[in-house]
Image (cartoon, rainbow, N blue to C red; front, side, top):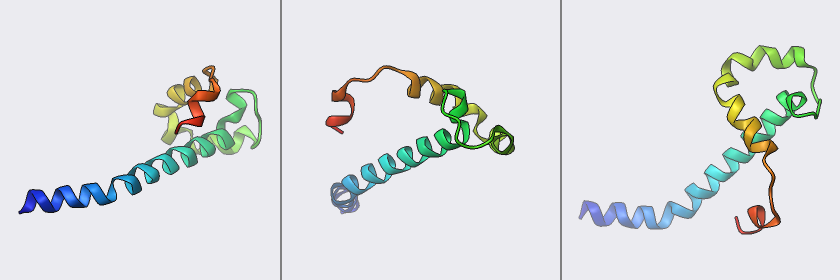
Length: 80
């Protein structure tokens, strides 16, 4: 009975959880772009203010720069 309950809950909530994860990733990318856009050539906020949060985002910074700078095709965003 428990497995059937877990299955029905996963079946009903899967789309919502996937959408929430996509929105979180989009907001995270936007925040990184606002604070560290000068690393990729888009200065929005002065680097002085970005230095305050740098210790918290440093582990994700290199992967973010790689994902922002990679070449994309229109099919990358049209089928999400």
